[in-house]
Amino acid sequence: SSEHIVRQRSREGGLDDLSNVIGVEIDVTVIAGRNLIAKDSGGMFGKKSSDPYVCVYSRLPKMGTSKMRLEEQAKTGVVKKNLCPQWDAQFKFELDGRRFRADLEVLFRVFDCDNFSADDPM
Figure 1 (cartoon, rainbow, N blue to C red):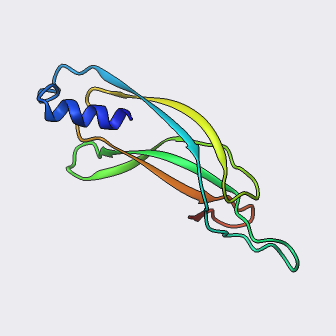
Figure 2 (cartoon, rainbow, N blue to C red; figure 1 turned 90 degrees about the horizontal axis):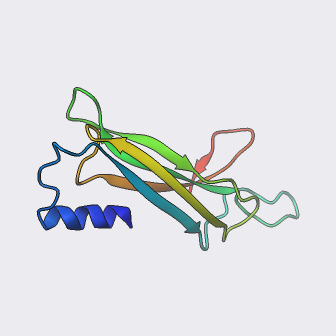
């Protein structure tokens, strides 16, 4: 993964000085989910299921503070009524040099899409 490569280079000393970094492009692929939990009732006779999707975030520093914040970078499509979804979704996102850190975290969160209420984390 891109994150692994960045951390490995940092340990080798290749990214100790980030002052010359103009920006980075990070490639992410969300492949599939397996055995997800059912968040939606199936009604009176239906089978329980979920409508999952994945949000990809980067944890970035808040400007002017030492605190961190999550910034959504990408989102897969929703796979309706499926507990083993296949996304095969590819994304690229860019960070300029001021926002890039050698210890950048990329997070993946799975949600169940709900039409009439807030989406449920899975």
